[in-house]
Length: 315
Image (tube, rainbow, N blue to C red; front, top):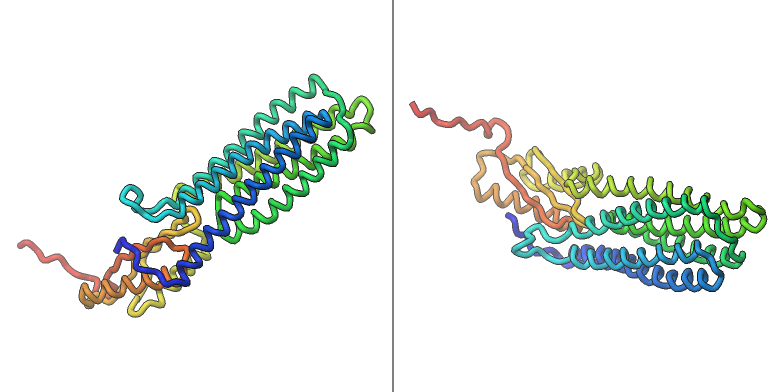
């Protein structure tokens, strides 16, 4: 029972839609990040703002991660093959894992560079550089809100990590804007505003990316799915004809989809053919009612007194 039976058109449409929505969010991220690279780099060079130039470099890294996520979703959607009998769904989780590491690493490097700025304060850029930073912050926050909603709806690790990156960039740009607006009014202390705000943002980035890293790591280790999903699987399987009890149930999330291993108990007096038919009914129900389930492995066991078979003595 390792090969999935044909799905109905509605189930296929829902599954395909999941990947369409995820890839659309990744493409939006790619396009917006590319636009922000141009805005930040141009503003930084024209207005002589090292903060905006550094932020532009960060956006270049975001473009790279967006490309990686989009490519991973394309791979994850591919069907099983001889080398990957369980499909390629983990590619989505691996991309999210990589993005969280990239955010953490980038925040660490930025922290070191920011600390060095305290020893040699730079000049104060023109206040109009703050306007550029505000525009970038608003755009990034809007992108975070959109990507975050899609990530929550699809339970996508890669998009959650990407949305986290968008939020970190929004906070970073906001911090830069505040520092650029406030610096001219703080006299000799104005040059310390920018690095101080940057350190606060870096601390937040490291904490949130580490939290995301641990969350995705547990998913890659095949942790049991959330209680709501497990309960739904149990309820659907229990409704199958002649299923007496659910003995074991393992549901693991793999990318945007799920794999199920379930042990159902039936009357031990049934024939092998009847038990096999019940097992297929359980599998068919789960695949039809839960389109994001990639495959189901059903093990049929005897139930109750009829299961107490004795092995004949050799004497």
